[in-house]
Length: 450
Image 1 (cartoon, rainbow, N blue to C red):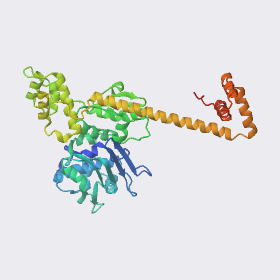
Image 2 (cartoon, helix red, strand yellow):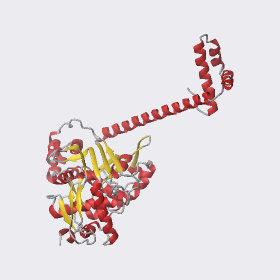
Image 3 (cartoon, helix red, strand yellow):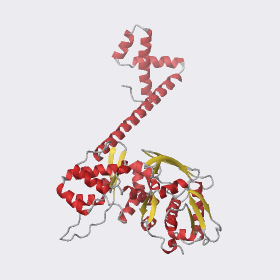
Image 4 (cartoon, rainbow, N blue to C red):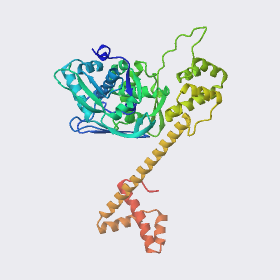
């Protein structure tokens, strides 16, 4: 009997690229006629394309990939891209019922993944080269199911070499399979995988609400802000209930960042500290933050006792920024951070603090809002001019003459005097057009032009 059959719910692994963007729909069945999904961030985009026969992957298909990664870890610890398995053991690992319908669903999922194309444009992290690259591939190269009527017969699947290389290069993180498979909502599961990766860097994150919902969770882009909040709320409550997220009131969770722009704050709920022993109290505050980043407890106590608190906070922020933007620069985070505090390292080149970054992002969003509003105003002006012109061009000659006469008669005395005083015919025509357009705008219910 294989290990997976004995204990399928042990701690698993998750491939880091798959945590960043969703690769499956949030629904249980493919959407009719929809065969492509696109997700983007500041680095580039991911395009997920389904086959004509099976369409896009669905929420249960995402669970299947998690299960296949775990089977690979148990079978050969990522030394061979081809893995033998039985559908029965995979069904057990996923927690699906041992019923014919679920065997059919599993078989369909495996075939669907063979036909799905993932195209990463500047967003596939190459862990060996420590940079983002372009990559396009099917996540599964092939699946062999010898006898679909006998689930106990050995089947096999083979990973695509690009994906398998990422696993071999260590671009993996731990994944609590008990927690993951216990989650009821597909939104909860995708949010859990994404945040579990991000929380490794720091426990407190603020994201643009649409960016998180659309690009990293995979929610419909048709949702307005209020719909996003409504759809996210059950998932947030589920993640709070299992002790993964810190519970927050809506006023603390969501902050307005500009016109139509909202941010969402997500904080990992840390385990309650053990009761401190009177003789040796446990680390708190800055000590805890240093230890969480790999500094030994003794060194953390010494640094907090001998270094200004502001220097420690600044160097923590510098180090977190380096880990996020230039991970190759820091091999041993704890040793680097301790040395940075002792010697008060200058901020790294290109460093942007949280406050500066938040201010820049807010300013960028405000500038974008102004640009969008200006474009809308220009479009409204063009539409109004077109309506005025269409109104005029639809009039027969006699009604045009009557309209011009009415425009002159109803004009302000100063405007009429300017028209009558104009000696040059082109000037008189221009003034008359202005008076005429003003009258037409009034008749059409359009606002007056300043």
